[in-house]
Image 1 (cartoon, helix red, strand yellow):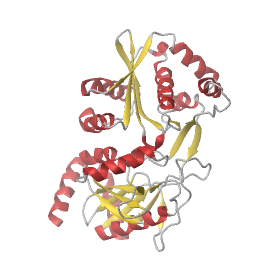
Image 2 (cartoon, rainbow, N blue to C red):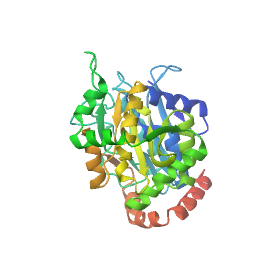
Image 3 (cartoon, rainbow, N blue to C red):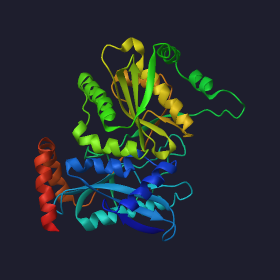
Image 4 (cartoon, rainbow, N blue to C red):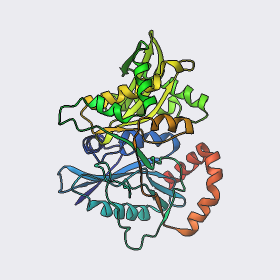
Length: 365
């Protein structure tokens, strides 16, 4: 195994990393450089440790990490990982061990990791359990909230149609009767779906997602914080923004990412007062059809949400795949205890703390 550290300034290296994540079934959207870079606004830096089977060869694995703070209160977060291609599972433990070593050298207080592994099922997106490196005591849970990945999949695999059956009929048959009815009802509502790519259209679509969050009582990133991520992902064919229109009026938006040869739904929203149009069912079914047309392996509804959102998603009868418990590694007990006492206050004043710790980081260098 040949290891290299790719930094934000190495655009060629990051393009190769993103390409690996898009082409390998083990890829994950939380490891895309565009997603990692989106945390710049919160004071995080990022780097990617990539693995090649031979020097100069193809990328076969890696792990992207978010770093925050300085040598006194430094944090290292791997939203999900390590990522290893099919056939290179043995590299996972080595990548984790090297990540912990680099964190120790940088003075990090804690490292937290969500391994893409499940004890309940095996699908191409997941790896097997990893053995913890010698002497690296880990504890369950994630003490730091930013940058975390969903600890589950809501997976809809496309049916085998080798016998000539229509895949749409077979997939619809899996859904609940209510979901099938609502999909068919939505198809009679003069709704049209469009894939938007321009910044003005993306902003209009994202405004529906932001508005939906306000109305439903959950937070989303503001447009000014997420604009460059969304624009870059859509331009790079890493993500798709679908917009549903009814009589030339935008009534719904659906944002999903294509890493891991799957269509992963992240955010969506519908305009208030259009419940009878079944816009949500229309957009999700359109996205599933697009995923199939792109020759992807399936559709992931990712996280749950409120009770109502979860009922809606479970109507598509996804396979609920919980991942193994996320872990964190404490590298300095006394500094971690100091951090644990300060963290509630740090969260309240995160912008100020980000500026102070960022300045301290540059001074320390």
